[in-house]
Amino acid sequence: MRPNSLHAADLAHLVHQQTDLGAHESEGAILIASGNGVRVTDTEGREYIEAMAGLWCASLGFSERRLAEAAYKQMLALPYYHTFFQKGHEPSVRLAEKLAAIAPEGLGHVLFQCSGSEANDAAIKLIWYYNNIRGMPQKKKLIGRVRGYHGNTVATASLSGQPHMQADFDLPLGDRFLHLSNPNYYRFGQEGETEEQFSARMAEELEALIAREGADTIAALFAEPVQGGGGAITPPRGYFDLIQPILKRHDILLVADEVICGFGRTGSLWGSETYGMQPDMLVCAKQLTASYQPLSALLISDPIHAALMAGSRKHGSFGHGFTYGGHPVACAVGLETLAIYEERDIIGHVRAVSPVFLEGLGALRDHALVGDVRGVGLIAGVELVADKASKAPFPPAAKVGLLVQERCQAAGLIVRAIGDRIAFTPPLIITAEEIREMCGRFKAGLDAAWAEIEGKALAAE
Image (spheres, helix red, strand yellow):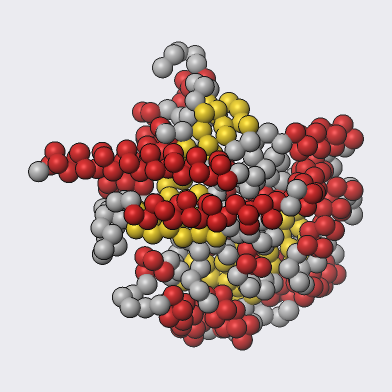
């Protein structure tokens, strides 16, 4: 490595997030220099199809000039202001108005933050506040799901069912965070059990948890329509149809974490729409600005908003907020992003190319490494297995998912290994031709990984 190079400076000073820091220290990073459409190019001139849209988020790709121009125009007019102390500005008002208009029924009030983590953290605070204001201070426990992902703050990492995000961080914090099983039918369905039966068993688990803890102690269930950080896991058939009546019967709120699914990813405007969810709160981020600016939104119902009003009257103020929440530049970019979605019928485009995407990945079910492929819209997860007939996984120490990720990278494709599941969430603008090229590069990565695995097996004999 060249002394005083960008890579040397990176190793010396930048702590990379969600990274094997030991591997990074020995191997260094891929540093991205530019982007064009669904492709990015690194500092060494290598080009990749970005099949993860960065972090599930660059919905309009990496070169949308209209968003850059919207940011520049707003920076010239009003580069910063806040929404504290009865102050505000037009971009935040107009974006809140727009979100309320397109939100699932009943979610007419909006709070802005900078990230999905902050928005889920705000949801947790507001849920506790809501139950205090309505005289139910014991109703505070929150239910997440194993392998669910809701953020990286102390509270949201406690709620998330991601062991590596809790180990040695002293998380989960306290006894307010409960977890249900991972609803991955392929991996955890019992022999002979249909998807509907698996969903019924998951619902029975929820009922048992409520009976054990007491409905009067449980405040909310947080659920991603499709579990992103768990490996792009779609819910089994009938899952939310069975879960929601149980929540309503026990006065437990449903929070839809749409940070990944919102704004067309599943082929509908909201993942909640795709799966028939009727949330009391909805969290969105990422594709709200196509990730050209950091912005998230928490959408809340009238009863929750009424509690905020009552609490403000009680205390003299609503004591919550973020300095950069509702930043005018971010809100201007959000408004332009939503305008582009409508003008270009991005959701219609997702529906049109989704069959090519799902069939292209599905054609790889016959590959020696692939056990299952499941997805919806433009999000999919590919499960790698050691034995296709028994669904036996590889030993974790083999790090087969990472091997496939690295071999895909060598083939010019950026994907995400989540254990031994390979996740795909390409930019929503991806074309059918680019999808076919993506699938071809993925097969090349799988082939290279399989050849290496076979070679090691032969060498061990």
